[in-house]
Length: 547
Image (cartoon, rainbow, N blue to C red; front, side, top):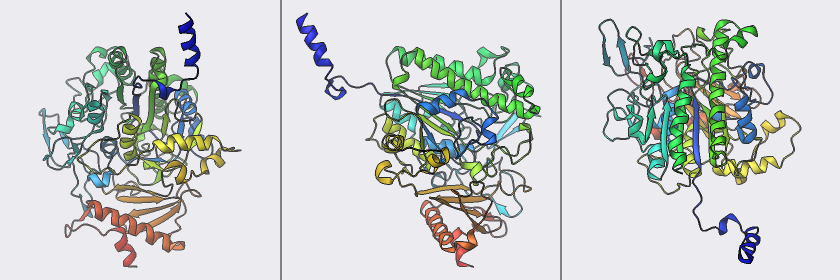
């Protein structure tokens, strides 16, 4: 008894580093939402609470933000596949040559046949021919034409002892290529992940698109149990995700859950659990259906957080919540007025203006990130790859691809601690606070490069099509390829990108144009080609020199 008491007394002075047992690797939940706008949440990412932040009830995102860090300047790609490929490879989309969504299946339901045609889903343009991009997406196998060969994130996690799970949307590659299956990327378990870029239906009465009269390549697979149940797809995927976690938790294995919801992508089909209250608030039918999709996703996040608490693993689980691109600002299905859904940000999905590329990002890392932190250093989707590996303690790894992303762990740990020591009187003051590179390990003025050299929607809205941009610090340059013009915005003063000040700051325009052009040259980034000559259009630096 005397020996036991003395050990107890000694234990009070021991630190974690004195223990001889190997610490448990953290579990990681990466929660990805499709077409989710920066202002679609009650979490206020900006300098103030905007009216758009008040449209939807997202209590669990709010809770997650209070437990960790809000990344106020997080960027993704203008459309889905490039972001998802960057998350899996750590590469910038322009470096991968994966600059558009991979949906080359043209459905011909009249005769029941389907065929693959390169870039079949890319809209034609009278002036430009399509760029020579990697329309087959990414591949874990070398030698597949028109793909970027890369070592996948999930495979590295699996090789280092993680139980890897994919639930929901895949959309990394095209049919008939290795990247079509999540299993080839290193996932041990896959629930419904495939080539589909959107769901055939969110409704169980449609079998989520798996009916003879409605079937297309977008039909959601592996969900037979829920057919005709009245359970919305978001809820069904959440239930399946929780089932997959039972095994690794019961066997004390660290897990990586890639929870990739189809919501809030079109078709905008309401979630009946939440629809009525938004109608009662005066929203039109489209707005209410969209709001119910948003709250359904938030409920999914809450269910996962509650499950982790119940299982006693919440304190050893990292949760990362992110959108894959800006919110869709032009679909009539969402109701309301087009081009206003992402305000104060300009435009939306498909655009290199802020509404198309700035996305929600929340990170909870227990015992590492200070609670209620706002981190304003710009970060980008390719940063997630090295960051997750670093969080998992995996620092010695080899990839066949060059990694463009930066490890954010020092920013998250030291930066959040540094920010928590500051005393801010307003949200605006907190959001403008810049963490020094010496503290965060990350240059707050490093280049954030976005590129969409394609035509996504009809030409009546050219703000969506054929654009590149680069942000460094407060300054952002936009290259409009169709008109061959360059625009400059001070994002810290003009988040709405209303005031083009290029003519007033020609030196900054030149600096950013040259930097962007050199990067595109280094990466050999494919650009649109002129129909008349099939030659690629000029890079931004050429626009400068011809003036």
